[in-house]
Image (cartoon, rainbow, N blue to C red):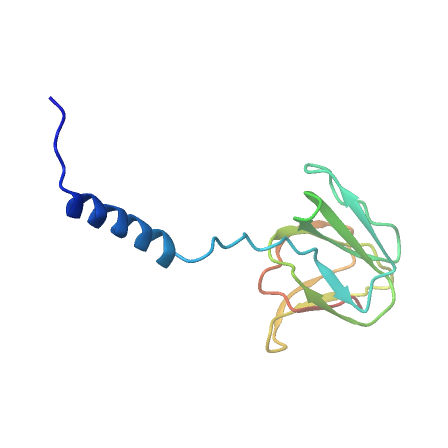
Length: 138
């Protein structure tokens, strides 16, 4: 036998359902992915698939970081001796210093503190770029 419901009870249930839908607010879209950048722009950049190692041409300090806009690693080739400001470098990657003459590359935190240095030894180093705000390649 079907259950009998009163009209006020049904109206109350409908009112509560509508109220919960209306007060929930609009659905928020996920934030759009942003590509990592540097300022000034480096000599060049290159995209590499996951698992590909960083190759760095002589005279460059190279840094790779995950680029969520293309789902690949983006390698930055820093050639000109200057300080590069980084934006949206929020993940792990690699660094390789292929400069000559003993040029040491340095990465800095938000307050200008030295986080790490990289000798010109062609070694490949794992780097957490999240706390890094700038790079001086020489």
